[in-house]
Amino acid sequence: MITIGLTGWGDHDYIYATKEAAKQKLVTYGKMFGTVEVDSMFYAVQSKRNMEKWVQETPTDFRFVVKAYQGMTGHSRGKIPFDSEAEMFEAFKLSISTMQQANKLKAALFQFPPWFDCTRENVAKLREVRERMEDVPCALEFRHQSWFQPVMRERTLKFMREERWIHSVCDEPQAGVGSVPIVEEATDDQLTIVRMHGRNVSGWQSSNQPNWREVRYLYRYNAQELEEWAERLRRLEQQSKEVVIIFNNNSGGDAAENARELMAILGQDVPKLLGEDEPEQLDLF
Image: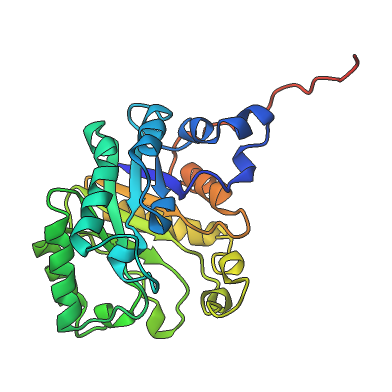
């Protein structure tokens, strides 16, 4: 099974063309896609109240991929609002417990930063993180090329299998050591995650620029690239029961359209946009 979704549900104006859709974004989103990445958790551990609301607003078979809080992956460069790592992880697990109990949590996604390279210390850190997360399904995404250099590739994948890490396969700009290649390999027979970051090399390297958040994921996949990914997804589907693909190329508003295009290529039903093909009403009175 191949399930397609987007990063977040708030920034995709393309699918909220009507006032009704814009008022209830997650409700509208849930009618079009079967999964979503909750990236807001990266910036702050969300309250159980928010989680309960999101669970209630989505269909029974809808699933969430929740991005790990930045303090848990070493992204945070300031003081984290927790007294200890143990407290931070417990707060995160408490937050996602609502989704777990409702059977709506697909996985917690741990995306480590570009400076998290392949060292003994960092391998030990990954073991520690996985132990802290207990029975929560956890996906792992690297940003440093050293994990998948030819000499380390198979060892990294073997480690992930042994430590119960779900592989988050990346499509991203090939911009030196701070990016990883497409590694078409599952590490879990139940789930593989694919994240589509675009291929904007200059934007990927713009982290020191004031507008880097606006341009980093500025990219639209063309038909040939999506066709190539459709074939990759079918191959990954032979290795995992489910492949979840998340489009993260949000900077230019391309994610939702690319996702719907891929649905069509894969022969999936492409839900109509709210208001699509409805007759225009003349405002006569």
